[in-house]
Every structure is written in C-alpha cells, then in structure tokens.
Amino acid sequence: MTIQDPHAIPTPGADVVVATRTPNRSRRSSLAMFRNPGIAFGTAITLIWLVIMITVHWWAPYDPYESVGSRLQSPNGQHWFGTDALGRDVFTRVLYGSRQSLPIAVLVIASALLIGGTLGALAGYFGKFADTAVMRLADVTMAFPPILLAMAVAAALGPGLRNGFFAMVIVWWPIYARLLRAQVMAVKQREHIEAAVTVGATRGRILRRHVLPLSFTGVMVNATMDLGQVVLLTASLSFLGLGAVPPAPEWGAMITEGAKNFYQWWIAVAPGLAIATVVLGFNFLGDGLRDVLDVRSAQR
Amino acid sequence: MRDALLTLKGLSVEFAVSTGSVHAVRGVDLDVQRGEVVGIVGESGSGKSATMLALLGLLAPNAVVGGSARFDGSEIIGATGSHLRSLRGGKIGMIFQDPMTSLNPVLTIGHQIAEAIEVHQPTMRPKRVMARVQELLEMVSIPHASERMRSHPHELSGGMRQRVMIAMAVANEPELIIADEPTTALDVTIQAQILEVLADLRQRTNTAMVIITHDLGVVAGVADRVNVMYGGRVVERGNVDDLFYSGEHPYTNGLLACLPRLDRRGQSIEPIGGAPPVLDVLPTGCSFAPRCGAAQPECNASDPVLRRVGATEVACHFAPDAARVSRKVTV
Image 1 (cartoon, chains in turn yellow, blue):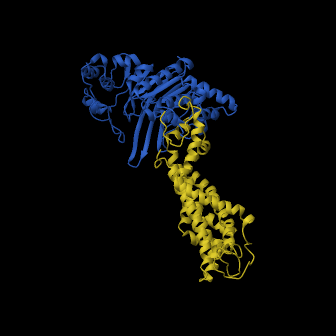
Image 2: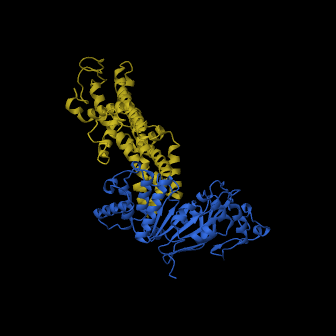
Image 3: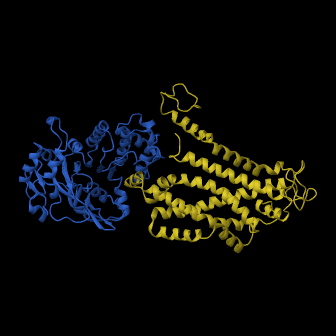
C-alpha cells in the first residue's frame, strides 16, 4: 500500500481489509479539513468569539451597563479600552456586544436560508409558474440597495434589534432563493436524478433525497460568508439608530457614541475591531470551506 | 398466441424546437412477448432510445408523443403520473448507459437499491429490505455483498456500478427490463460480464428485456428478435439468426459490413457512406435512399412499408433484389 497521507497512522493489515477502513478514512478527512489554513484561522477566530459570547458573564471585569469610573479615560491597565462618555468600561461592552451580533447573524441566515432556500428550491425544481413568481419577487427585492431596503423596513417597523432582524431577512432571502434555484436546476439535470425517476420515486422524494443534499455545498459556503455580512449590516443599522437601542452594548451603536466623542478614538475603534475580526473570521471560514468542498479546486 | 407484454402501434415522438419540430420517431410498431429478449439496433439519432423513453414518460417536456403503447393490457401513452410511477421501477425496470453518472454519489449503493424497493413496497420492514438488497447484489454477482452495500459509488468500478444499476432495475421483479446501451460505457471484457449477468437474470426470472444498442455483437449474443431502426422507423425486423444471415435491408447489410470479422481476415471494413438523416424536415420516400447503393428513383418518391421478404420483415421497395447489390459489397 502506498500511503498518500503523511499524517496517517498505518494500521496493521490496513491494506488487506478494505471494508473496515472506511470509517477511519472519513474521520481522517474531516480532521484534514483543518489543515486548510483559511479554515483553521477562521474557525479559531469564530470559536474564540463564540466562547466569549457564551461565557462572558462569568469573567467580564465590569458590568456593561454600570458606570465604573471617571468618563472618557484613555486605555490603561484597569480599563484596557478606556471608558466611554458615561464612564462604562469599553472592553466589557465590546465583549458583551457579541451577544447581540452573533445570535442575530445566525438567526438571520438560518431564516433567510429556510424561507429563500425553500422558495428557490421549489422554483428551480418545478419551474414554470412557481419559478416566475418566486424569481420576479426576488428580482424586485434585490433591485433595492440592501442597506436602503433594510433601513426602510426597520424605519417602518420601528427601531430595535427584533425589527432589524425582520428587515435583514427580507433583504437576504432572495440571495438564497437564487442560489438554491440555480443549484437545484443544475443538479436535477444529472443522470442519477433521471435514474431515480425511473425507479418510480415521486417528485417530492427526489427533491428531498437526491436533489437537495447535492445542492447545499455552495450554499453552505455562501451562508458562512454571509454571517459576516449580517454582522456588518446589523452594526450599520444600529449605527444609524435603527437597530439596537441604547444602552444595549451593540457594536454599531457604540461606534455612534464614539463618533460623538471623536477625539476619544478608543470608543469607536474597539467595537470596530470586534466587527472586523468577526467578519474576517467568517470570510476565512467560508473561503476555506469552498476550497475544501469544491471538488474542482480540491487537491486530492 | 398469448397477448404480448408490450405492444407499440404507430408510436411517434416529435420534439418541438425553435425552428419547428424534429421527428425523432415516426410510427414504430413493435411487440415484446413475455420472457422474450428484443434488441433494437440503430446508429445515434435513429430514435431507438426516444422510443423507449417515451414509454416511461421520461422525455423532455418539449416532446410530443403520438400513437399507442399497451403494456400488460393497459395503455401507457398519456397515462397519469401515478400510473407511470407505479410502472417505473415496478413492472418496468430501466438500465442506463453510463453507470458512472447514473448513481447518486452521496448515497451508499445499499441505500439506493433499498430506495427502489421502498418506493414500491413501502410497508416492507427495513430489515427485510436490507436482506433483499443483499440478495440482489449477490444475484448480480457482486462479491462480499453485505460489505459492498455500505460502499459509495466512487468506491466501485464501472462494471460493478453497472451491476448495481441492474440490481436496482430488477429490485421489484419487473416483467420488462429496458436496457439502454447497457454495455456502451464499459470496456470489452466487462461488457461480456454484464451481458452474462443479464442472460443469467433472464434464465432465473424469465423477465422480458428490450436491449437498445448500436452494437450488433451485443444483440447477437442475447436477443431473440431484432428490430433495426433507421431515421425514426423500423426498417427491418426478424429473428436474430435470420437477420444476421439473410438480412434483406441494405442498411442492415451495411451495418453488418461494418463489423470486424475473424473469418474475413485481411479485408477492410466497409463503412456506410454519408450521414444519418436530419429529422427536422419529414423526408419523402425512404430515409435511407441517399446512402443506399441500390437506390432507384422510386425510393425518393414513396415510403416503403414493412413487408415479409424471405425470413424477415423489411421496409424496402426493392427487397430482395436490393440485398444482392448491398451484399455484394460485403462478400
């Protein structure tokens, strides 16, 4: 046996028993995924932020809502990112900010995927009227600049993260409708789908069991990258006063406060860095996933 | 004579395209008896696949199917979706040309064969289904069937995959198997194995088969009767031996002349000159006339119909005389 994988541990007799090797191999390849630097880096950043989000209330140095010292202190040993105009610790507030942005990012993408993905898959698979109806609706939605549409919806519904969530789902569903429609249309042309038809499977069954599982690869990459974009849009809405309402420690809202105290740069820079790292992490993860999942670019 | 399992009468297929319509199949009559193996031979575009796909309602949406096809006593052209679904994979199994692309790459082969069973026998218990899957894999001579069930298609060779396709096609003990170029994508030694599997199946289950191919060698090995198709029509049909030894149609003889033969060493292979007809305009007269060495003015004027000449039925105005001209080329 030639060992292609330098990290593989040669097991005695592995070259003889073919069938029992299968589970080992699949575990190895899922770990091998992390050898992709993009995935490793992106996963690391994302994991760090996730841990912060979940555990911050146990170890955060201060309360995010309470004034804990004199106002507008520059960064120092006690307050790593200084204090804001109300004397709150900026570092603590940035850490707590993850509790606003990350859940909403996941929720927005999950909802957009569910709504847009379902509509798009149906449009792509059944075509005809379903296709026209869904895609024209998507076209109309996508004709608006995303930030403008989100602002309009959020303004109409009133400020608050919950309304921001609805606004962003309205902005995002057409992206997944288009993506899944295209994927489904490509996959349904494949011969093994026709083979499934000749076996006598119903259209619903073919869509669920044969078409959808193969359509998700590209969608997963897009969804990961879009997580970062949602974080960004959430912050933008809050920055404009349409998302989170003060005193909530939300990154966009914090940047607004920073803009009011322009010479106290740390108030805006700290949440800005948080947004940058989160978006960067998701982008790296998405890029890496594409390299790993895309058969054509895989170096196997 | 008992009722035929499958009877086609005047079956036609047209594809609507931007420039008008393409007449892929133009009035095919065909019957398949129970337990019989029928070969359909013809070159690309002769309408052989379109004929069989039309039966199962598998043609592209722009196809218009006419004529009649009775299977097991009921009409299936224009039948409802659910009736067709119960036939597909149930009473009619289908084997495709390319086993490399006809299996779902992300499901194990066991699951895919199991699906064929579940779709038609939804009440069968999962354990029984898996036992049946193993039995099917053993039937098509896949070694270590119980382990192979858990393999994905990419872990199998082309020949193995084609066996899996065959196992799927016979999963519900169909009365008819349609094999569309079952050996074309395989190399020659594997072809022989697959044909053996098919012959073996027929012995065991007495299933009728329709084998679509452009390879006369395949037909000679397994079929009882042969239909030669050209330009969307059956131009000659008869028992396999009669057709091979005393085929009357110039096209049949032309096809035979294209085969390399061990008993005629040193002779060059004679290709049929010209190209198959373009089917977007209905040709008048015999569609083979432009390529036929024995063509007369009458061939372009009227369309010959199938009639019995000698041992076979042939659609040629000048049979059996034309055969003498065309055979002269081969001898």
